[in-house]
Amino acid sequence: MPKVSGVKSNKVLFAIISFLSFLFVGFGIVLPSWVAFHIGGSRLVGLVLMSSSVTGMVVSPFTGHVVDRRERRQIAMVGQAIRAGALLLIAPAPFANDVAAAILLMAAAGFGALGYALQDGALAGLLQAIVPAEQRVAFVMRLSIARQIGLAAGTGIAGLSIARFGSSMSAVGFTAMAAACVFLVWMIKTPGREVKSPQSEGMLASSREALTYLVSNSMCLVASVTVGVSFAVIKITNLLLPGFVVRALDGNSSLFGTLEMMAAICGTAAVAIASLPRFVRHIEKHTLFLLTMTGLALVVFSFVRTPFTAVIVYSLAGMAWSVTRSAANGHLLTVVDTGLMGRVQAFTTLLTGIFGVVIFLMPLIAPETAEGTLYLVCGICVIAAALGLRSRGRTS
Image (cartoon, rainbow, N blue to C red; front, side):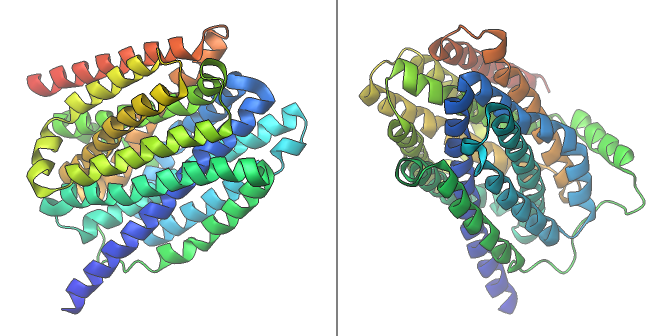
């Protein structure tokens, strides 16, 4: 009985931490993007978000290696502390000159990516150790509800907070909240024995082992790439939505926050329905179809020109990518060996970073191209990626 009670308390903690983690993701979507857009337009937004992707790519071998070798609860705490520091770097940006502001925002994005990679990989390993394999997809789908609620709250609160208190005060308040959450991570009851990679194994050998594992296991590779593409969709919206709201919809920060909040709320409802036992297995089998629908939603959104229609279409897109992301992530946690989870998560981060660099370079490569046109191009690319992954899965 004590063991069962411990598992239940851990699951509750995972739900709370997931909610708060994505609350901070919501802050990180709205706050730096809005500050960057008003300092340097979509080009600076692209550079800031690209900094996050590049950092994720560079540190992924390190974070995966560390997560699989060290005590994962401690790594998760360090990751959360780094995320808090990243939010604090945004506070002085509105008062700095353009160059200093850009450096602060890019540094915040980089440290945020490092902290998230450490925390997410460590928590994924802990989840594998706590939740039996046959329950993971359903649990991760339910956990995604907490994440979606957190994302909805974070984006909405950030937009309203910027309008009421300004960017700097919002950043300070969000930092205090993030720092307090380190204690919650500490409260997780770790398993008596974690599966880790050998201590004597170097980082290069460790990374090579993970790549060999993925290449030889097509199911894991497709699952990892699917997660990467689904997160790339979020990067597309992070980059293009501020400019699209201002230029195509003639809106402000409130509309920006409302769009993100409604997408997250509808995504939460969709994940809640999808997590029911009668739907879980069907959703898991049709993740790539949902990814295709996500790309199609981006294509449709590119033609929207009124705020009301934008809210409806963006909400539908949020439903598609929320279910896709949670189902793909749950499937990944089911098929990957626990001892390799940190490095496989790092590989997924690397893929997401590569996609992100390509995405965030678009405003620099085509500075005169409207955000609506870029939405159209990205939607078509997502559809093509989903069809390619589906073909790969059938031939394996």
